[in-house]
Amino acid sequence: MKPGLPDFVTKKVLLLLIGISLLHYANSQSFLLGKGKTKWEVGVNFGPSFFLGDLGGNSGKGKNSLKDLNLEFTKFMKGAFITMYPNDWLGFRVAADYTYLEGDDAVINTTGIDELWRKQRNLNFKSDVWEIYGALEVFPLQFLFRNRETQHRLRPYGLVGIGLFHFNPKGSLTDASGNTQWYKLQPLKTEGQGMAEYPYSKPYKLTQMNIPLGLGVKYFFSERINTSMEVLYRKTFTDYIDDVSKKYIDQNDFAKYMSAPNAALATQLSDKTIPIIYPGMTRWSSGTQRGDLKDADTYFSVVLKFGIKLGPLSDENSVRARQRKCPTVY
Figure (tube, rainbow, N blue to C red):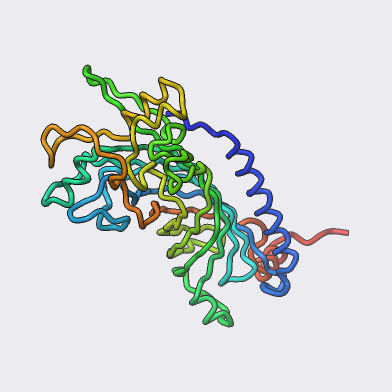
């Protein structure tokens, strides 16, 4: 699957340039924070990512929490970062990542009526996700013992930031022959987004803001090379990463707002109910709850990072380097 990148690429590059500009500004002020010893680090990261939303889940009522994590939909995240360190305990990071998220009601293990409601809903989705963010890294032990001449190789840290992410949910239809096709869901207004009949259902944008929150531990093989293990949770402000949020609508309203082919697709993809609780039932009536009305969708990752410090590392190293040089003959 080749991810499409509309205007998001432009926004992504613009945000990256802004972030780098801010880092340069911070660098010019580093004498206030790092006494002129600012260091730069670049690196890559990769590891599993996980979706927490309306679709899929485990026993009990559906919640956007670790309880409903479906490990079978573990995906792979990869990315790159650049970080400025004005001192040993503070860093300013700009990063970009790509991953792929998925959810499906069919995977729910049924132990009671709460799961049957979601299993009967029978919806699924998948989406590429691109993100870019800026974050503040804080190393608490380095701050507490910042006057020590030497620091430990193993250093825990926390981070918080702000970013943008782009998603584009797709739902599937399978024909009688078992062939499956995927369709973009946002243009189909599956919950009546933007329709006058459903004023509570607002259109959603495919590029949204998120707030990365994380914890990690960093190990220095040397002053120049390090690795980290990091858990990064993204708080989002949308419930439509999986295109499921509120209520079912009257299928006849689709034809009022879109072409006949799209209206037919929307009718099928908005309600794929299978008869489990109510034998013979194929659709829900308008106004019936379709998703979790309270919680926003989210995702998180557990990544391994590899970083390399750039440029001179310390004044002492520079002195030793000068001492190792051959004397100049005049």
